[in-house]
Figure (cartoon, one colour):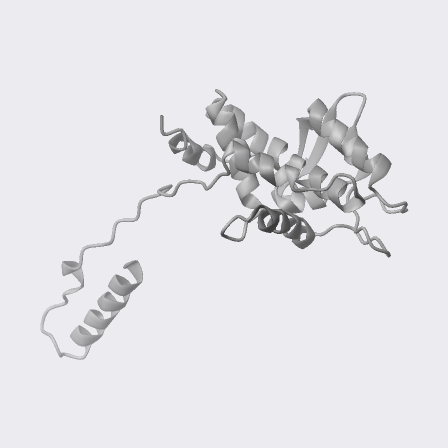
Length: 213
């Protein structure tokens, strides 16, 4: 609607400039109201998120890796590129911290929950191929390339297909699920913003509409 009004204003100005109309009518067109933050973030229900994790066959290398990637996304709200960019040096096991490389080169230290640490250790011991690469996640097949953002997104999409979700599952929905679950469990918006590393409170404010009750 905004584009149509803009085009119509241009056309009216053109008509007035060419003398086709005697009065400039652009002021008679009211602007189209644009409301910010009108959408609802699309999150998975708790049982859907659990199905997603259970779809990974953790008896295999691929399953242990994919499970670890999605646990990081669901428990820490990591973006696909942030999960793919993790290195072995980003974990401080003695202090229980994980370093996240976010947008614009931003670096953030987050607490490493025990359940996440256990999943990562299981992957390192029985899933990660031997490699000189310092990247945490590697391809399963030789030459074991470092994981990319596209590969992380494919992991989520593949799990969604195994679960029979009707639409292609985007990796960012797992991040929305993290925030939504935190809110439903009593977390405040500032706390959610800290975990998701939002630079603006306006970005976090959209989750104020998720808890319909």
